[in-house]
Each structure stands twice: as structure tokens, then as C-alpha cells.
Length: 228
Image (cartoon, rainbow, N blue to C red):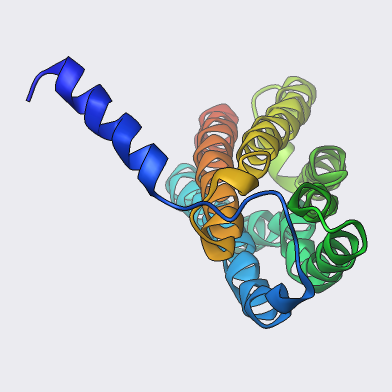
């Protein structure tokens, strides 16, 4: 099928497929309540990706630290340093019910799905700065590991610098979420109007976080001195 034919067929489908439109009736409540769990699942995928990336780094660091005095303690310290970095992403689980309730309330109050969609953005408000702050706390906890580097102060500065990449990842994913939620009136169903944006958001954020965390952990492992 040629390009012209594909475009023609897509145009015809767009004219015949119904969309939910701009309204937001109270009858959406049952389906909206079911969407809370779906949105929460997307947030949990992000946390799982952060944990997995950090664990991969633990394996690389373990190979570097092998044979050093206190090797086990240092690896445990590295593992514990994940907590402050992970916390902002785990907090998405706590924030989801409130964000979804706000979305429904605003949607019904205004009668517009755009109001509901915009309210859902409260879920990710401040995520970037919180991720950067958590990262800084994690780096501080890594002090005993950083002390094993050839240049501890340089390694500390290098690790702290990766915090901006985490913040940028959150901001890039939020941009995707904003754009996708804006398309809500054009979706075929309320379910798609909510799940599609959050799916794309988590895919973008997971990809960016995995890249940032892999670079940071590999750099840390590379900076640790080999055992004497």
C-alpha cells in the first residue's frame, strides 16, 4: 500500500472512529476509580527500574572492590545509598490516589476532561527537584565508598553532577505526559485517555533514568582504586 493510500485510510478512520470529546460527566466515576490502580502500576514500574539499575551497578562495584578490606561493608553501604534516590519515585504510589481524586473532582466541577487531565499532573509536581535532592543525600551516604577512589573529592563532585541528569529525566518525561494528556478529548475512551499518557510517561522516564544511573554507577566503579 502506497503512502497516499495509508494516509487516506488513516484520515477515514479518524473521521469514523468516535472520540470521548471534551466533556467530563459524573458517570465516569466507576471507570475512573478503576484507573487509579493502573496509574499506580506505571509509577511502580519506575521504582522497579531504579532498583534494577542500582543493582546492576552493585555487581560492577563488587568486582572492583573484590579483595579490599571491608568489601562487604562497602557493598552494603552502596546498597543502602539507594534509599534516598528511590524515595521520590516510591512516593508516587502515595500520591496517586490524591492526584486521581483531584482529577475527577475538577473534571466533574468544570464538566471538562481538560481540567481532569491537568489535575493529574500534580502527581509529578516537584519530582525532578526531589530526585536531585534524593541523589545528593545518596551521594553523602556513599562517603565510605568514595573514600576508596583514587581522587575522593573528584569522585564526589562527579557523582553529585549526575543529579542534574535525574532531574532532566523527570522533566523530559513530564513534557511527554503534558502533551499526551492534552490529547484526552481525541481518545477513543476514558481508559485510553488516561493510560496512554501515563504509559508513555513511564517509558520515557524509565529509559532516561536507566541511562543516567548506569553512567553514574559505572563511573563510580571505574574511580574506585584496585586492591593493593
